[in-house]
Image (cartoon, rainbow, N blue to C red; front, side, top):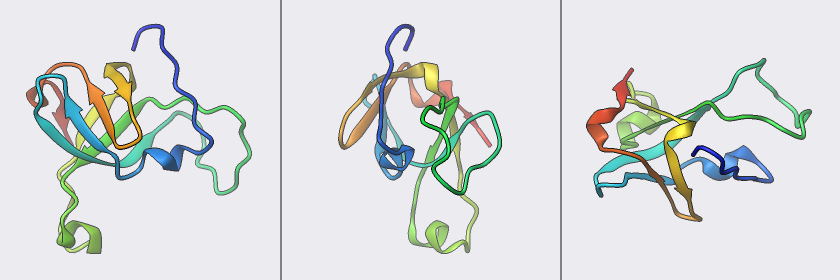
Length: 99
């Protein structure tokens, strides 16, 4: 996303949104956002830059914490489009590292 900027009232609006690569492959759902700076427990900043999305499968065992999430790290600059129900990113699923 070279020159584009997306604005949200809350970053939590991105949680659980499907992530799809531009080739059509599914990367899963967003379950965590990464950003530089200290964690916030209250809305203290009016501006926050997202550095990366962590996304992957969110099955029952992962949601309950019984199984580790198999996360893909998608840099924010790979985001092409943000919709109400889906985020589209550049490339293919194999372009992104697992953690």
